[in-house]
Image 1 (spheres, rainbow, N blue to C red):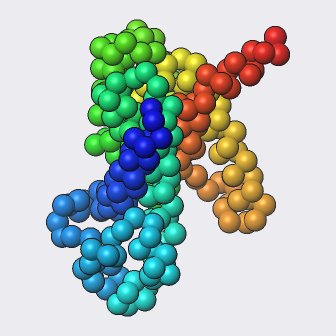
Image 2 (cartoon, one colour):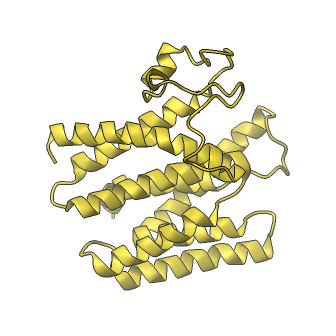
Length: 253
């Protein structure tokens, strides 16, 4: 896709990223994502239009509410920027796909960011996101002419979900059913090779971060860590660069 259209979708991603921040904050609290309007959670100040510009408003306000001067989390602009960057890259890589396929890619990217952030905050992966992700992944695989095939998608979802379910049975404190549904949905979208790569990257990254946290004494040895963010990270790597990684790996054989 051309650079101009890719930039347009990148800007669209910034705007949608701002909405994703609302979803991440409100859905776990059972709040409406529509009403009331965007406001400071500390003082209730209703944000004016110029305070809602993705990334830029955070820089103008120097990371603080304009009224009460409460700090604004760095994650807000980071997620907006990341969503915009990934939309741009997905559009730029889309050389022969339809706008429908690109829209599905955008949905996949944004849901990964939402689930990763929510799980990091709450140790929860809400069904309202994981189950539609699973259903859409299967529908895409069966009805759109793109890899993985429908039966591969179904097998990857059942295999990955079943494996994680066994982990919850053997070690209930290690995984939750939210992780089971999430990894099944990722299997539906990514297929067998993609979900294997996702789990490997997530496990490796989670282990490294866990060891660093232990070394810095930020977490105890028996303290739980959310696995959803690492699954989301692994899925993004597999989604964008999975084929290149596989080609590089097999070039040694």
